[in-house]
Length: 117
Length: 116
View 1 (cartoon, rainbow over the protein chains, first blue to last red):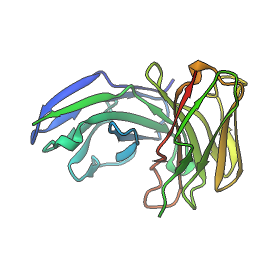
View 2: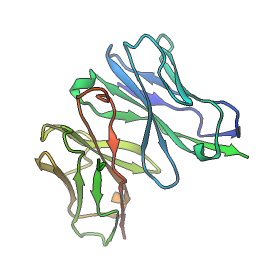
View 3: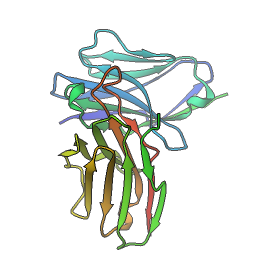
C-alpha cells in the first residue's frame, strides 16, 4: 500500500540557515510523483516543488530543492536561506501513476517549521 | 487567471442539517479532487473526478457524503445529515494534463465546516 511518512512533527531553524525536512515513501508503482506543499497559518495549500520518479536530476525551485534518493525511497525538502515567512506546515505527498492520468495525492502528516529571527 | 474557487469559506451548521460545499475548478483543468483535513486524520482524499466522471470515491466516509460534477466548471460535495465529526476543512483541487504544469494540483482556499 502506498504510504508517506514524515517523522518530524516540528522543526526549528535560525533565519538565513538551511533546513531539511524529511519524507520517506512506499509504493510498488514504478511511475509516481512526489510533491511538497506549504500550508501557512492562513490555511491555503501552496505547491512548492515536484519530482517525477523517472526524473534524472533533483528538482529545484528557487530556494527549494528536493533531495531525491530513489533507492532509499526518500524525498527530502531542503530550504536554503530560511526566512521568517517560511514558518508553516509542510506536507510531503505522492501521486501514483503517470502525470497525465491525474491521480490522487497521498499526504504525510506534515512537519511544522518555525523560523527563529 | 482565477484560481480554484470554493464556497462558502466558512459554514456553521447544526447536527442533522444538510451541507453543500461548492467548487469551481480552474478553467481548462480536467481533474477535480475533494480533500478533507482534520487534526486527527490529516489530509485525505475523499473523491476525484476525471473529465466529470468519478474515478475514485474510496475515501468517501459513508453514504451521508455524496459528490457530483455536472459539468467541467462546477462540483458539489454534500453531507446529509451532517454530524459533529464532519467538522473539518474541505479542500477542492484541480489539475490538468497539459504541460508544463501537468503534475501540479492547485488547491482552493478551503471551506471550514463546523457542525455543532
